[in-house]
Image 1 (spheres, rainbow, N blue to C red):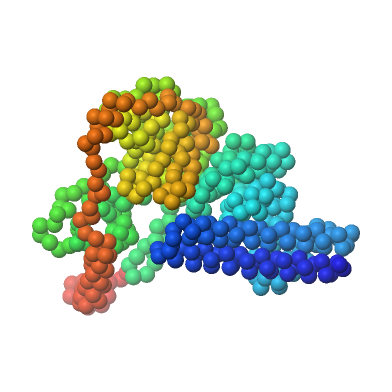
Image 2 (cartoon, helix red, strand yellow):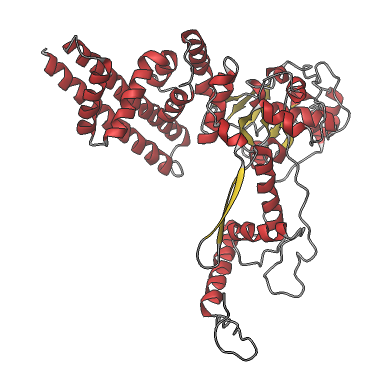
Length: 506
């Protein structure tokens, strides 16, 4: 085959991979749409196969682009890699009908697939990770210049990335950064100038509104967010404002030092009258040496996926309340159903999030679930406790999911269809010592007989159906819109100085 014939074949292969990627994505959505009416096991398998085929097609597209760059270099021995890259970029843009910038990014990631992260690239080609994860890994590792360090990160990402499941952009970046921080803390991408340049900017817009843009420390930002939500929830259900509007109005209440938001239901006997917002607490986990300022290990915060720089931890520790975290190691099971404060703190710091596959609800908003139910002899100890958000706690109890927990905190889930999924504690990368094995579970046969014989659980009932709740919110928002449209606006106040009808001098 001639050289031009080879390049044409590679371009055709690249276009075919792009088309296969689109078809696989569409097939995945079709399988999800049909899941409600046909055999679930077959459709779940079909959906997963389509998702894997989508990733494989995306990887094949990059492989073809990488081979095209090599072919162009081989055609002209005197050409530089930059010239070949630019030439291939133009061909890729024309063949796929995309912009030159997007084509250039395809070429860069194709190079990384072959040379920078080859082990992760093989996982991508096999469909074990998707294109979003691969691209994020390539970008986040861009500051690593040492080949051995990059190879070590590549090896760990190839093992851990396929187990991450679905996560948003910030969560994905944080997980990659945690891997990088273990070998080269300076290679973690972050804007150092933002730490020193924290600021709040207030700017007027129109219609009497003002925009507020703030760059603050992560703990302060999350505390502010939680406080707004707490204030917004102090009104009753008849308040017609959506949550976003109530949170915006809560800034005024917060500025005035109020502990509640004025309800607009118009009822003299408002059920939310006198309801105050709860206190906000933000949990930051750090090594003692980092708190003391003698180490450069990053910290983590429950509910925040990113890493907190050590210098910020040292500064925050000066005004924060510090509480030591004790690993239970071989501690005996506790006697009651509710764990002690120390044990609860350990489990939440070990897990960081809900332990159901794909869920990232913060551990501070999750229940502490006994893997083996307490009523069946399950002890109250670290090896039998994990964090589950309320929804997934109900899923485990009533919807046929079962789980098994290992002494290092690993949880193995089994779905009603028999599929198995494994989740690992969120602290595994940054604080591996929290994953040290704890005492194994020893069932109490007597408790299992006494407590399991007559103990039953019932699915909680909603006070109103979802359809009723949705209709209520729609009606409330419609009434608020109608009231705003039909209410006669208040006329502007006439300003006069000693009877002079001329406007004021400002």
